[in-house]
Image (tube, rainbow over all chains, first blue to last red; front, side, top):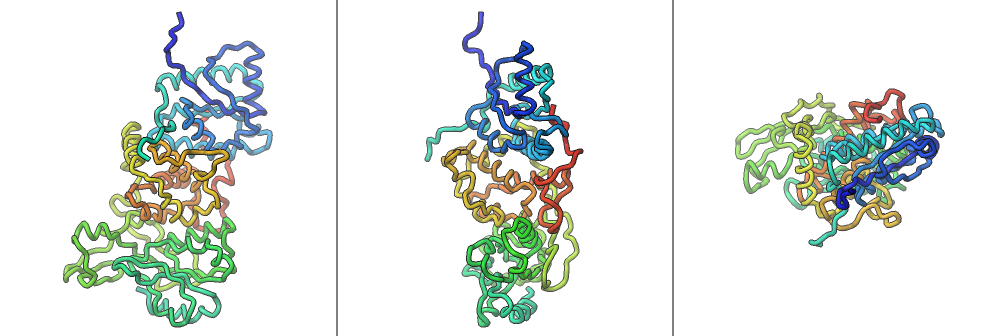
Length: 146
Length: 312
């Protein structure tokens, strides 16, 4: 029996159109199983992701965020992922500094041919987020005192 | 402090520049106010002391100032701010004349009050590194603003004229450079509790943003409605979101002048987040904001061996 009230994490996945999105497609075409907890948002490049997108995902109720782009050196736009890496590094460290669990925000490099790796990454991310439970920090709140 | 040098220099350059942005005694004791000197007879008002806290670079961004050639009195941190503004194309080099003021650190009124109770200006005699209170001698460094305790650059890295002599690098004060250490030492949940508690206090008056000379976006992300990044309501998580977003916008730009912390009416140590980002950038990207005009901003460049371990 499926337990109806069991909590399942909601994970927003920002995937690069040129690699990870195709990787997810390959995983699907190859019928590789992975947990159904992710909501995929296709972006043109990992470098196109504004850190505010990630913060907003948390605010709107995501329990976890995954950002996945091309391996270093493989960017369709030559260097988008290198710039993205610096931004993501700062964002991730800053969130950890502010007391937000590191499992909430995860990154991966997945190429278009790595359907298997994509499913593994999703499994790991979902497992990590399940371990720490629903997100409370950063969720939008209703103001009672304004 | 520096009054003579300042008046001499001011009378020399006042024709060349249309105004001198400096400090003048304010209407309150222990506070200096920003002062725009445009006439010969105003030159005598210019002064500089341990209370010249405001970062005057903020005033370079007003529309009127952008059109004029102005001189500006800068401490170490302010000069770094001006360099960031120059680098970002916000001000023109030919419109600027930097008057560097080697800074002995700014004195915190709240720390004075803590020690001496109700303050009365005649009780104090000020010198460069010490002051006397009713004949008793104290070191300035025990009463510095938090941002000055962690200061590493008392001298402007770059200037057109310098008042006085360059100072030696300040000693590392207890609690100074390791300002972040006490937070970093806490476990994750305690850090969250600390920030959650501080964010509860925030009323989102945006004084931090408005006092920051580098927060000059014409439309701040908090004011945007399409998309609407966050609500205007001052709730804990929204406040944290605002401060996280602001820190990220300051990445590689914050010159640690402490204007935001001094502006905060609730005394939230709001500099912690941008300071942590700056520390990361110093450590991992070997960059410090506002030290020169040539090094590219850390988020506008990359290296192939940047940190990669956090990515699967």
